[in-house]
Length: 319
Ligand SMILES: [Zn+2]
Image (cartoon, rainbow, N blue to C red; front, side, top):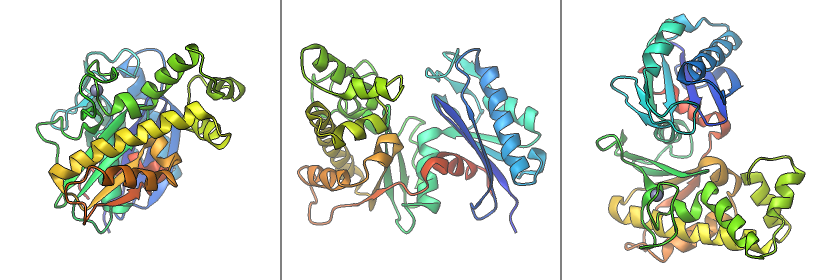
């Protein structure tokens, strides 16, 4: 039997750790909030604590694991274990040797990968992508991330592949959080949608989005707030979600025209929340732009849920 492995998903708000057996079944898990103050060393310490707790839940010592994989935001270098420019984490504008720091703290090998890419690889191996030879993962959340697996092999390009959120869906279009114009994320990313909702609301458009946000004590328009507003028949929310689906359909179909993958897996906070009927709407929007329209790719919703990122990260460790 293969040895147990650890996996850590490092998010902007939470750190999720798991310990899985050789078949990818979760034996122990733990979650901690991502530190909002301090710097990379404080984040690494919280990650080590979460992993120790997950290992304890599995009845294991971290040092006894075959290794630990980490899905990290920012520029994650799989060769060196260094993470740079993780700008949604405190004090992480520069570079930090995350892999080496965690390996020292936990007493086993640590491998670092891109957070979205490892989540997509997790779905490919164990979730909604099982049985397909090639897939494009689209992680629809605060931003829109992506990951690619071709003939069973992750396609990382020169390290920056899969940035599907920055496919241009409108030349000289809306300003994207990346600073460019017309990217898919400028229409479909949760952060960009919130900014647009606020602009339109301040221009006098009626909406309950911000009332719901305050009522539920949320600091931002979460996927749950969007869902509530839609369920209430909020017109601005419906308009902006339709606009997002239109952009996603255009961008994802364009990527499929290049890659001709067998399946598209939709994940992320909004992707998980808006499974149906929105996936039918997405399929419809994509259909307008697919060149080979008689054989469209399967559209699947990510199946591993909250633990998917951490389980996917554990696959970075060879079993
Ligand atoms: Zn962009």
